[in-house]
Amino acid sequence: MDRLCNEGRAALPTPGVTSAAEWQIRIDLAACYRLCALYGWDDVIYTHITAAIPDQPGHYLINPFGLRFDEVRASNLVKVDHAGNIVCRSGHPVNRAGFALHAAVHGARPELGCVMHLHNANAIAVGAQEEGLLPLSSHALRFYQQLAYHDYEGLVLTMPEAARLVERLGAFPALLLRNHGSLVCGRTVAEAFVRMETLDKACGFQLKAQAGGAPLHTPPHAICAQAQRDLEAGGALEGTLEWPALLRKLDQLSPGYRG
Image 1 (cartoon, helix red, strand yellow):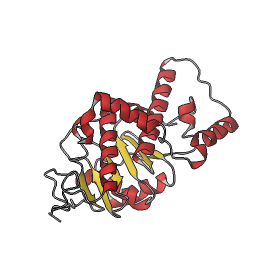
Image 2: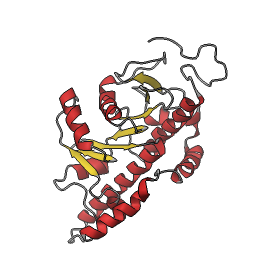
Image 3: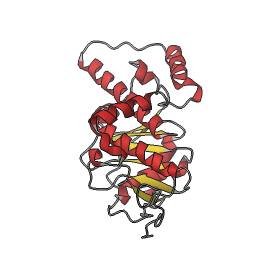
């Protein structure tokens, strides 16, 4: 559908934006991309973070394919449908093959507002270990018995693989794609980002502990399970308090994301 969705609507900030809710999601998603770049989680132009537009069922935002994460802005995010088709003229292409993973997760988990797939080094290294993430830190305990794994099946995601991946993810907040990267989801962009930061730190702590060469200590199962319940905070939205602080940091270091 090649059209300008808000032609004649001068009050909206950029062509293709049809509501204030969409513009807010664009700002949050662009911020998420910029923060990932600041944290060193980007992979040149590859991997994607998607957000569902709350008042437009079946429509999602994704990064323009070919731009670095630090070049993403609220206005240049591309709106697509569930098949990866561009909904409004944007001047930028999208990676439809890359979006397929996100489409599968969004389709299976309609409550999700954001899906992040990254090639972050800590997650790849831990995902390549047979035992995966170990309960070695409080950050790791957030995902105790709440982390899925998916074995590597190649570069191209097929429909049968997508079904297997979604089944393994289930209702969990995160999944390690072995030998490939990480997938974290959240009801909001803020929740997904904070979960990703927690997972990345947990993986990094594990690698540092293992590098020491000494025997590793893990808490008893009952303690791990209780800590996980406490850290999950009874279903509260993670990132609610952290997100404004992260945006203040971003406004100082990479303010162009809002434009």
